[in-house]
Length: 198
Image (tube, rainbow, N blue to C red; front, side, top):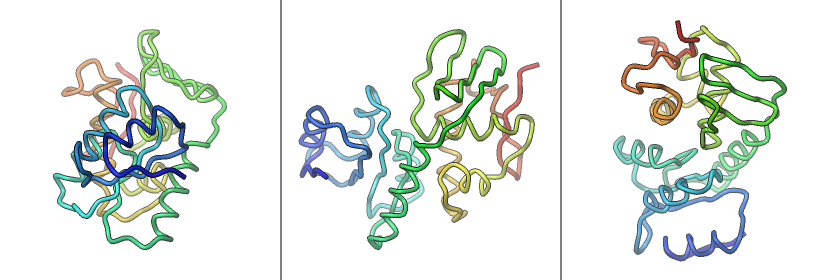
């Protein structure tokens, strides 16, 4: 385990070492945790958990949209944080054994890759898990609660904004027109489903 006291030091340390997971405090001296997360996401898909005392909805949304896989509010008991870390790492280890095609989108579960029009998409681990879960049940609506359980491995409904923020990020990568999605559809009052384009 390695620690850094500032965002700049953390980015430098990341260039020198390859951790399995990053627990990132939002309130850092220098550049804040949101910006550190964004910079990491430009080049790396390592799992990132944001740890912060800021629990306003807007902060959670900003954190998730910056690319975090989970958002944990302080104060948090050590065993709870350990459980969230184990859950994020477990999700990254899940194996799959087939592929699925949705129009120009091809999901290769064995290789854990997604291509669109033949080009590799750079998805975060959580975005990939969300797409895998939706693609296992094409045409079936999954509630936010189900997706929290399947993708994030916890089911506190207050965390449903995790699902919404991740869906928005995923749509930006897989949809031709993210504001008018044809693949990942919203099922009003329920959640989301993955449709093959007409």
